[in-house]
Image (cartoon, rainbow, N blue to C red; front, side, top):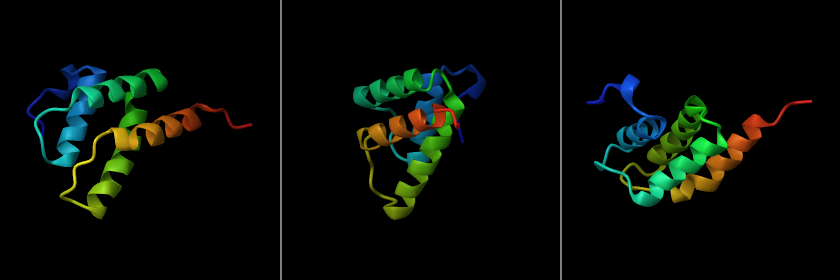
Length: 92
């Protein structure tokens, strides 16, 4: 449950809030994690829904494998960037 009005959050805040709630631990993200989120937003050209979808797959799988382990977004950075790029390529 979010304590924020999700309609009023910026792209970065929305993604950050999703990550914090998905992890279930922590109250804030590191500076490095915020920079990674900014990189994803630029790569996805502002497509927040795409980023949230990709994160839900990755974070859900990680939580199932080890529910008490916290992973920095650095662990997911390249994987998410690759999936963003792959989703933007046109099928011929």
